[in-house]
Image 1 (cartoon, rainbow, N blue to C red):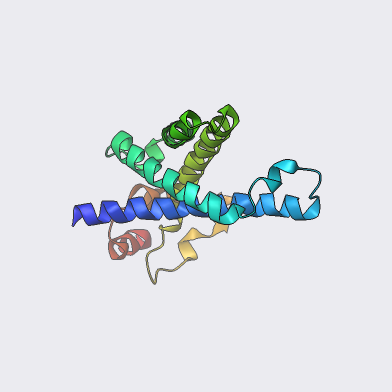
Image 2: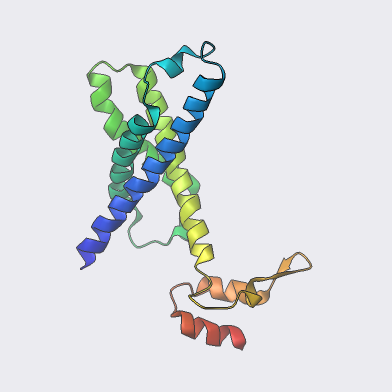
Length: 176
């Protein structure tokens, strides 16, 4: 069953990167609709969302594989944005190299690598956000997560260290 979870994780990472591509495509389409003559670049492809979603999915899958190989058993909090950006850049290079050889041009290669690096760093930010949101298990109270006078409650630090503890055990720990 471990391999099923890994395949699912790779697929989900591809979907996340596809969403990044659609978001970028939305910005490109907005620029094209607001000032169509100002940026001839936006006229190169008429269907930006689909195009960037497919490219993003492929890069996300490659990134997930690189991440799985390079990360090992380290937790997200032990990794840096620079590492994730580098692994994202590797995914960009892997998929942009055949296009470069096929005549796509160095600009495509550089932009692809840069955007993949940004998406890699964004993936770590998203993972850390999800990990922080995971502090509260299903049905747990948000009472302990409140801010008082601009300072976080002390039990948040203790809960952060035990993210992989059963939610029921975490609630018992928070009551102490």
